[in-house]
View 1: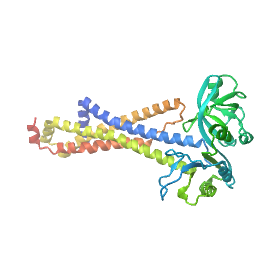
View 2: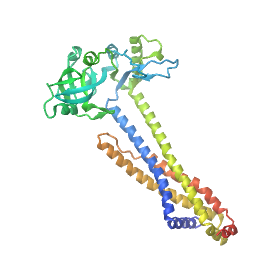
View 3: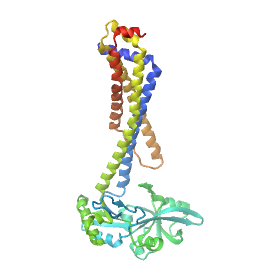
View 4: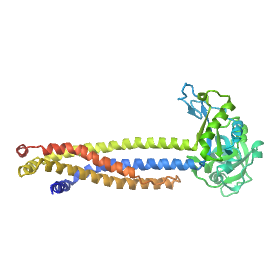
Amino acid sequence: MSILNPLKIAYKAIKLHKVRSGLTILGLMIGVVSIIIVINLGSGIKTFILNEVSVFGSDYVQIEVKVPSTSKNGSDNAMGMASGITITTLKFEDAKEIGKHPNIKDYYAGIVGQDIASRDGEHKTTMIWGVNASFFNLFNAKIEKGRPFDEGEDSSQDLVVVIGSELSKKLFGQEEAVGRKIKIGKKSFQVVGVMEKQGSTFFMDMDNATFMPAKTLQKKVMGVDHIQFITAYLKNPSKAKETASDIESIMRSQHKITDPNKDDFAVTTMEEAMGMIETITGGITLLLAAIAAISLLVGGVGIMNIMYVSVAERTYEIGLRKAIGATNSNILWQFIWEAILLTTLGGIIGVITGEALSATAMFAINKYGINWGYTFSNFGIFLGVGFSVATGLIFGIYPAKQASQMEPIEALQKQ
């Protein structure tokens, strides 16, 4: 009964001061909601990115251009184009050499650009993928109408394209696109195929994209002789690390590089890519959760202030209870229970509200075609409620202790 009596008194005090208690709960609830939403959305980001990466398959090694390091330890390497520098050393000859490796079953390579696709007054900005013909099989890019271009058309730099389903609708409406002509920039191309609807892949709108032979894009559109990437598929994915090391050696031999710090390329396995993604998304989630925790700290300060006000308002009550036999422990536990009840209630309401808002947000995101699944995070619930209760105890114990140490005579005289 020595524990239950202070609990009952604390409960009555909370009911008696509904507005004050409600504001305290609201402050804590906002903090818990913030943490729940941040962790759930962070988990959703991670799942979304990993799903997007998996579209490309899990049995490949990616080779991309890289700005060579200018430092001895190679710490300032940057990928792709940086500081206005364009790396033009990656060639199709490199891809052919990589394709000879015994653990490489096939590859595709190419370059990406952007231009205006037009027909009969209709215009659409389109991302242009210049790739060799094996892309369509390896990327699992299905053709809805017509056919993909072949290696012969790539070698002869034919002006042929495969277009995305939405681009076809934009330029041709309900008309048949296959066999018709469109303009890319100032050149006229024949449409040989229309892709099935694919949606967005890694924030790239594949349904409005244009695919043409890599050499056609190189020579007749962009006027270059380099490529930007090589995607090599493995016969035995368990040997990805060893194969990546061999590819690095092949590339250094091709580019006549003796110092690894001067590499103008980067070789990445799927496992390494996943590891980098998990590290980045995990760091972002923790950072956002730390920011959200500030809301809980603010709520904790609010609890301390309210507890001090409560002690000041009930000084006479404290003195009277101690005069008729209440111990310091009774008074201490009365105010501690108030803090526990308020913070626990704020935590529970915050969890329910946070999960509901997270589910609503993810449902809305999915409606826009982004595959962002809802994730129920036990860690988020533990962190939200645990932080809430801990905040209440940390900020509530000191005022409670001050109240319990009051002398009865002094407390009664303050009324």
